[in-house]
Amino acid sequence: MDINGICISSATDEHGPIYVYQTRNSLVLSFDGEIYQSCMKLNNMNGLHLDYTQAMMAGLFFIPALKTATIMGLGAGSMAKNLLSSFPELDVHAVEYREAVVKAAKKYFHLPDTNRLCIHIDDAVNHIKNTVIKSDIIFSDLYNTGGMEANQVQSSYLRDCNNALTEQGVLVLNICNTSLHLREALDQLLLHEFNNQLLRFEVESGNTIILAFKNEIPLIERKDLLTKAQSLHKKMDVPMERYAKLLLDTQG
Image (cartoon, rainbow, N blue to C red; front, side, top):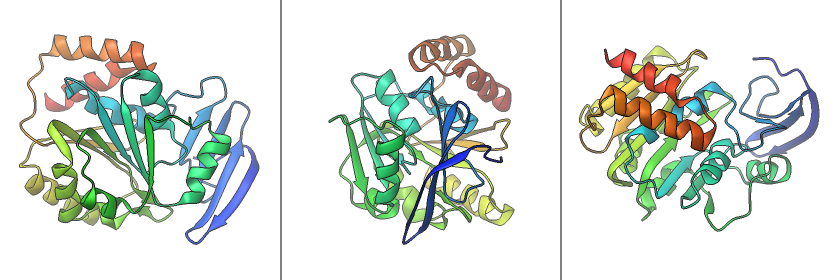
């Protein structure tokens, strides 16, 4: 989508540019000046405003007790901020390769300074391979201006994510702007590394959200799923009922 706003910050590191735009009611982080990487509404700084970031929260339907979350790819910190503000007892680990992105998130997007948020300046593959942290949910949203990071399409990365989950944990992946060949390769790796314990659905933006479960997919009755969605809606200010229905419709 086009960014209709004024560039208020432009920085460059060894990986390329980092832009911050101000529109009439939002701040936008972009790496190429054309595609939204993150968006923050000025009147709702902790909200999730991009459809796919809301949809990725569907993984929370299946977590009985949320204590620790890991986000691969901090961006402007939208998911981290929403989780921290919605779940007062939650610890969040965010892995971001580019320190300049973290600086932009803190300066312009009100990323909080709290001991419940631990930011790791590291490559996602290296971090997840070496971490001793067990997360209830891992969000993997690894993209650059060329599309999906190839590192996300590796059996070793997916296996390490699996190992870093708690017993009832879920890996959530966002898939967009990805070639058919790469998507098919990722599908095959997920089938193998997660023993076919997968759910997926598409959102209006064209993104595909994949939920990969460490163990068997929990059985949740339609009524109970919608009830949990309503509860999460109140906590997060995100229309979670929409994504519960998408999951139910996709699974038939």
